[in-house]
Length: 113
Length: 117
Image (cartoon, helix red, strand yellow):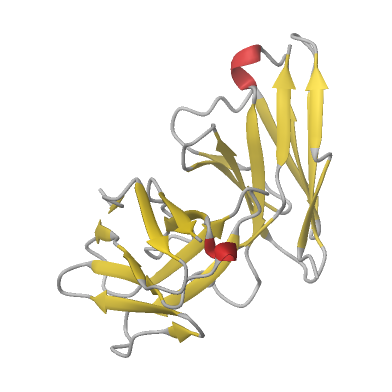
């Protein structure tokens, strides 16, 4: 079975600091995509960053970057220079090749002013 | 701008009535759309995959006769909650997969809050 684990139900970070959200998964597939989505209080799902499993280089989008360790099946999200607008639920959601996203349980991120 | 729209954004209905939720792809034609439900403080749970011109594929445990999905055009999929009961109260979200490829990201609608009294 393909599973996704987000072991941190809640995280908090001081504004302007850096925080890392963890995600591990289990799959027998070799080619897949990994995504981090953000869900703010409005509940609109917003794509934060994506990573192709065949690429060794970690994806980066401005203040957001990932640490992708394929062998360890780990896909963590690093948020640098945290801002108040980053407060949200963050979901790790791989696509293991069957067109479906498999969502983790989410991490609620609080930004402390 | 928005890629996916949903209507209505929220709905309150009486127990036993049916409610229809629309999901529209605004920027591209979508042969595949997805329907999720999300309970408070929980993750998204995939209910079904909606395929244009064919029957939807339901996830295990989802009652197909209760949650009717119609994908009649390349830009519109509808979810009808039939004979709604209070336990059907939830947040329903649709998503659209771009036609480029199966492993690409999905774009999500803003969601529909359903409250069944």
